[in-house]
Amino acid sequence: MSYEGAKCMLSRTVDLHYTSDFLSFGQFMLRDRAVRLPLLQRLVIRCRYIPGEASIGLLLTVLPLAFNLYHLEVIPLENASPSVIREMSSAIVSLTSLRHLELGATERNLANIYHVLSNIRSPLLSVVVLLPLLGETPRRGVMYSRRRDPIFLLSHMKATLEQIEVGGLATFGSYTCQYLRVKKFTHPTYEQSTTIMKPIISSFPNLHTLQIGIRATHARPSLSPNEDIRELRHASKNTIQQCHDLNKRDQIMHGRWSKLDSFTGTIIDAYATGLSCHVATAHLYSTGGKREAELMMLSTILTDWQPTFLRLALKVHDPAGHIRIFSSSVSWPKSLATLELRVSIVKEEFYFDEYFNCIGRVLATTSISALRLEVRCANTSWNKDETQRGPGAWRANCQDPDWDGPDAICWTADALLQEDLPQRVRACMRSIPTLRQVTLLWARCWSTVPDRVIGIDLDNVPYSWDRPGEPSDMWERWGSYR
Image 1: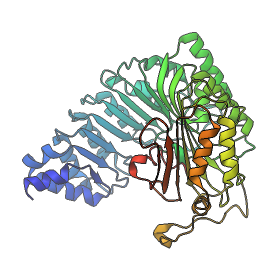
Image 2 (image 1 turned 90 degrees about the vertical axis):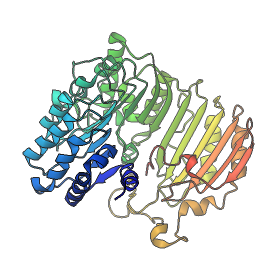
Image 3 (image 1 turned 180 degrees about the vertical axis):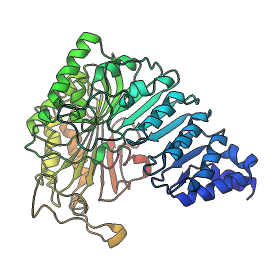
């Protein structure tokens, strides 16, 4: 292969899924190592099953020689022998060019992950650590372990790290370490790890962005409407309410951030943090539970944070068009300038009259200037109605265009095609005196861009638009939340 051909191939991320990939990739790289090794920059190793050392030997030869490699992801090598795990760990430690590293841990290789993170020579800027989960949380709560404490695990890299993501069962204790350059921290969800903010606030004094839930927040199921979410328990023995109260007290006694630029996570996780500083941009997901409890949590969050930008995402199981967390009883802050509301409709029926009336009624007393409404169908084959149990829980699902063709049935699309949506947008604009911009986007199930985008902007040309959706509409920017 010519130099230009090798350069084109290795300019993209090299993704190795199977043990056969290890052999062919190793042979390819070593066949002209002087030319090809300097071209390797991004490598992902996803293979979970490695039958023997021979299958990975060439890859372990290539890895330490890749002196321009700056992005490396290694998914847990669950069935690898201890010697392979040790060699892989040594190869990663020896690299000096890495700027981003992602490591997946299992119970068997947790010690090796600790070795890598404690001895790595590369000046990492970002790191992702996926810790193993426990099969069943002990009744007395998860005990503290330094090998599961991200603040301790990553302390070797405190001088260079700017972004940290942690998934799985992490534990936090009294250990703190100053990560002065870290601007973004991603914390595991309440199901996986207890949210203790004191060491996080102390260790990341210059944090800009806090996210809870790594990558798949939108995929979490809805909770029963009879479940009091304040009494849900963390991975520790504390309830959400106890965790909130503890974090509140700690911030009063030991200090807090003065502000955050943004927060992303569920309403439950946001409430558990007990944050009392200004949060400029809030992206919140509803997971359901008792309505009055969730409304209380949302009101507390908005009162404490006083955001200027709020994005709410939720699944709707009620065909009457009722938006359960969209209520005049919520303390909508005066600071709020932009609101984005994403509604994923799970039912085959939805009454849009009530939906639009509810929005106008609730927001009439606010002072928002920009409103974005997203309506998406989530009535897909795997979306069981989580508010029902037993026989009859499956509904009439929409059809997949990839399987059923361009005329595949989508109940939400059929209903919206009967609506005068430009008139709906104009009515919404009239009902909220301070509004300067309204955008309505909708899509049938399975879509990655909106089917239609309708909007009014009183301050910018064009003043109105009605067009098909496009990738720049950022339909999938926060996940599908299906």
